[in-house]
Image 1 (cartoon, rainbow over the protein chains, first blue to last red):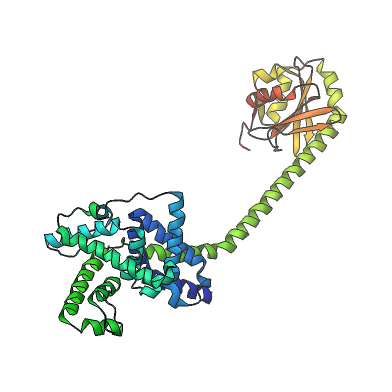
Image 2 (cartoon, rainbow over the protein chains, first blue to last red; image 1 turned 90 degrees about the vertical axis):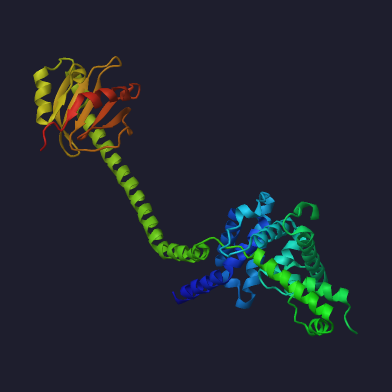
Length: 175
Length: 238
């Protein structure tokens, strides 16, 4: 009974610590709110079943990301998700923004959605999860220098988008 | 060897908040490096803000419920297993009980018919009055409707597995058929039993049951509707 309680408590701690970031990550890799929620649910369902195999709690974040990425790959094999317009799926921010700032954020979000996944994924791992380049390298199974190049290029594409005309720029011509 | 501005910008692009010694040294080496770092950090704040979408309300609670549901399922598992075993035992018990009851009725019909079956068919040739039918039926808290009574050629009381019943012989185009009315015995409706070159079709009635007995070449089940609709049982609550 005690081990059941410990297990549940451990699981709940993981859910509290990582479900929001996993949702954000899922949201930005699949661009679909409902699928993102399903992916996170499925990730934690699998995590619950396999919780005893997680020996090092410090590795939990990477472990959960790996489960989610595999689940996404499986989902993607079955059905290509329909990318929605980011503004229709992103929950409106409570934050007060000036109109220019709001327009810039919309453009940036559209730009992130349009990034090729080889640029978007490392960027998400770094910004959403705070992964270092070495950790991203390990997570994605590519070299650290390749990770750094992809991160640099991802940011360059987004910066060019904003510098060109932050509010009226055409996001499609950059990607 | 000091880092070039181009190399520094690439480093910033890969990790704007990088705090490696060489990055920090480069940042402090010249104003343009510092300006580039500040610009990169400003962009990074916009990027983080753009990526910071709100998670759906209740997401954490929904996920935490996975463990609760699983725990509840585990808590119920012994009861579910016990219930399954109980249901299985009950089902086996019911099947065994039914088969025992059927065997008991089959034995009764075989015994009874071997003693009185042919003899009563022989007496049916004389016919029977409405009053005689009514007298037997009333005693058994039952009544024979017209469709049945006009076919009855012989009727008398007889023993049944549970108390007294009626032994009738009715006429059909396929020859005389025997009906045993068992007021206090239940059967499985539609069960068919065979004994001594005879077969019997069992009919469950509102109160009690009946066995329609004939030779193997006689379609006994065709009398089922007549018996069900015309043999009125339990007329008075007792």
